[in-house]
Structure formats: C-alpha cells, structure tokens
Length: 247
Image (tube, rainbow, N blue to C red):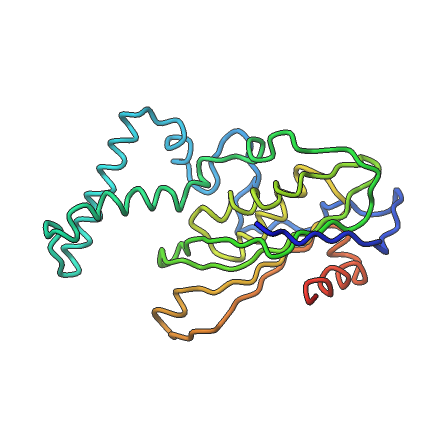
C-alpha cells in the first residue's frame, strides 16, 4: 500500500484546557462499547464462537454455509449439480469467510504493541487507504478510500505505527457494515489506543447496491466523516485536515 503521510504544524494549543478526544456524544443507536478487546462481540454474539471454533466445528460451519448457497442457486433457477456450479457453494462459503475475517480480529491483536512515544504534537495523517466491505443490507460490496488523521497529546506522547492505521481500517471493513458505522468505529478505535487530542476519519466510497440495483446510478459516491476531540470542537483544526484531503 502506498500510504501518503503528512505531518504539519497544528494550530491546537496543547495545554490542560484542551479537550481530549472524548467529547462526542454516544449514539443510542450504536451498541457499546464500540471497542471490545476481549469479548469480540460487536456487533454479534456469534463472533467468539467463530474465532474459537475447533477444526471440526469450522468444517461444520463451512458445510452449513455451502448448503445454504446450493439452496440459493436452486431458488434463482440454476442447477447446482452442473459442472460450472459444482464447487461454487464451497468456494462462495470460503470467500464469504474471508470477506468477513474482521470478525476474528480484535484491536489489541491488530495494534500488536506498535505504540511509540515521540515528542510530536502535530497532525499525523494517512490518506487513501483502500478498503473493501460488504453492505449488511444487501450483502453486496462497497469500496473506496479511508483517510485517517490524529493529533498526538504531548502529555502522553503516543503515536502509532502508520501501517496499523490501515490494519485498523481493514479489521472493521472486513465485517458486514454500513459506511456510517464503519467511519465511527475506525475513529473510536484510534481514540481508544492513543487517547490523542483529536481524531478525524473520512470515508469516500461507491456502493454497488446503488449501482447494480435500486436506483442504478453508476458514478455516485458517498462521503462520511467522524470527528472526535479537538477535530470536532475546533473549526480551524478541522479545516486543516479537510484541506489536506484535497491535495
């Protein structure tokens, strides 16, 4: 991945009066906690069962999924026993498990200790992180780019390995998603591991549920953002981040 990394002087004054990245009100429509290191239970209680399954249980899961795909093929008017489709149910089941492999990850394992202490209180930004996810409403893909920025708090001096930002994005994207929730999850995860002064996440994507079905509008795109801490409360700081996205 060719990450574009930018570091600039921020206008945020670093003092005891500066709000930490905890000022965003929690939504009653989002299950808490967004970051669950141990339970692996967001958003489904079946997540732990999948991660801790024995080899025999994994084989049973794969066979169950393949059987469901055979039923779907029959229902659309196909013959699952013909040559071209003979192994499709198992192939699709394996592909679906890969597309949703983020359910088997948790934030602690993804970060894997790559938190460092540096005397840096300027904006850190990684742009154009490509992602692929599945819309939970129609189980069709939406793809695009995630842009992540944060401002370290020089009181704790925490910065994160840049590749870990991409891995955090990947972990949440590889689940059944809606773009709005994905945006917030990535932002909250960065806040959780770094406790920075502010976090900003912007996602730009194309949804195949709008292209292949429904309104059928190729070329349409969706942009969402989540701002935490000083990125949310200080307009000038937020504008610096957003202006950099245009470069």
